Image (cartoon, rainbow, N blue to C red; front, side):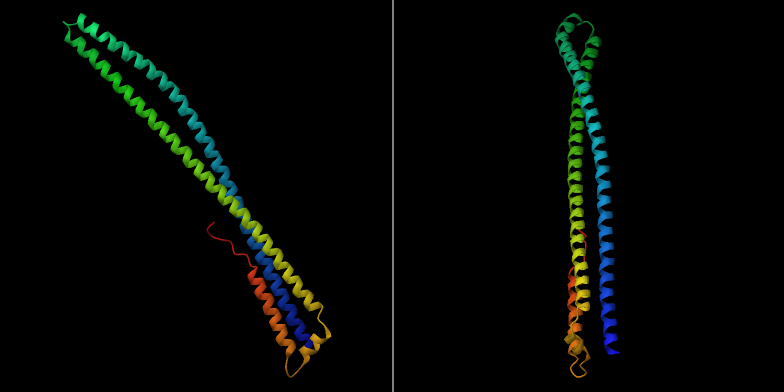
Length: 218
């Protein structure tokens, strides 16, 4: 009766350890894979944003070409106006209004030229900031993706060791010797019970050591 009870107790402990190991393996592996899929989706979204940023950059470069052409034309126009101004002043000394209008036109063109230069510089700075931010986000997401892959590998390795521990405990139980049985039946010292308790505790400690605990900050 005692021997049967001991066997049932050991079998129940082994099944509990094996079940806990399988549950931990399934849950940890599934969480890590889900996290890896989320990281992959974020990578795809960031790549799409990168493509949009490249398109915006191409548009800015196209606008820069147009602005450069306008700047050249206006610069030439300003130069022509400045060159014509002395001659115009000589020929239009009698018309102060015409001279004032010409001076105003030159000032307006110069102001537009300065504004367009400032706008071009701001657009270039914005494009550089956008590109830098995109590169930083992509690098961060790549690091997260690599960390998730490492977690999946670590989880798989720990789960394999848990399965081996469960199998080893079952083998120890199946291959129990006659002396082990006699020790369990000893009414005085109960050596078999003590050794069995120590064995179960040892394998429980090993299983706890191999339990996968994913890091929250990688």
